[in-house]
Image (cartoon, rainbow, N blue to C red; front, top):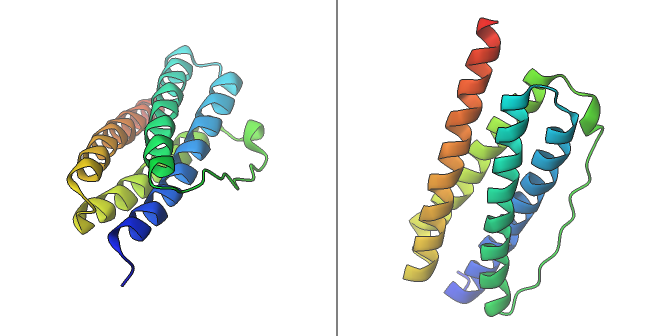
Amino acid sequence: MKDRRHRTIEVLSNSIQLEYRAVFLYRIHARAIRNREVRERLIEFGEMESEHAILVGEKLTELGGTIAWTFKPKDELHKPLRQILEEHAEWERQAIAVYQAALDEHLGEEYDRLFARLIKDEQHHARVLSELLEHLARR
């Protein structure tokens, strides 16, 4: 098995990918959405994901890792609102699973706190996105 430092770098490298994808997509989708409530939530979540990216990036570079982003966006501006929200909700669930797995590995107290915070924030995002989807379904 890889040593703890190496494994932590690997987890943080994967995490930075998730966070940068979220930063980009929340912001790009917010610009394309007319619904004020949804747009404001996506902007808010984009800002939170930016904070996450900074936190993860700091920890990654402290350990000697390198920040890299390989995300290739598809045609993101021409999707229906429901699809956008469903995709964001799924990505939040994926991020929660990644952070929970990292937390379960107990990579160190400092990292456990980081992943617990990220889980809490991503759960909030997933919950709000689900509520927005329910609201759209009632219309």
